[in-house]
Length: 117
View 1: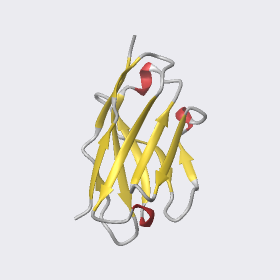
View 2: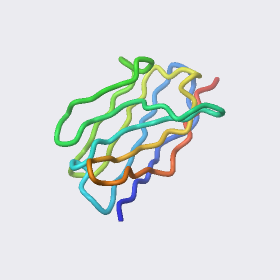
View 3: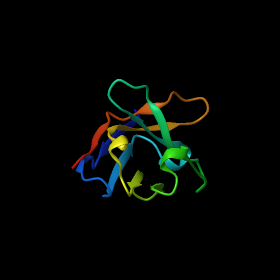
View 4: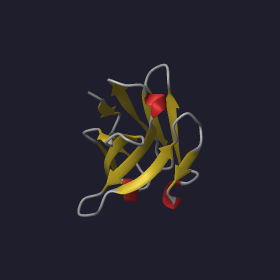
């Protein structure tokens, strides 16, 4: 059973930084494309960043380019999202997801990130 557990969310002031983590258990993280999504209140879930399986190739939504960095530590079976220069519009619940062909997409429970002064 593959499980994903996020942590590291919280309250941060505009312009601040936060790093959220996603620990994968029950499988090997490098087999999966790891993604971070976010869902703000009353809005649809949005894909924020991806790091592709067996590679360091990454992809970002335009609104976070240059501010967010997705990474993966295969030894720790953990994915990360480093968020810098945070804005109030980044406020959302952040979810990690693991996907690969032939498997269902696995989701974490989400972690709240609030950017406010």
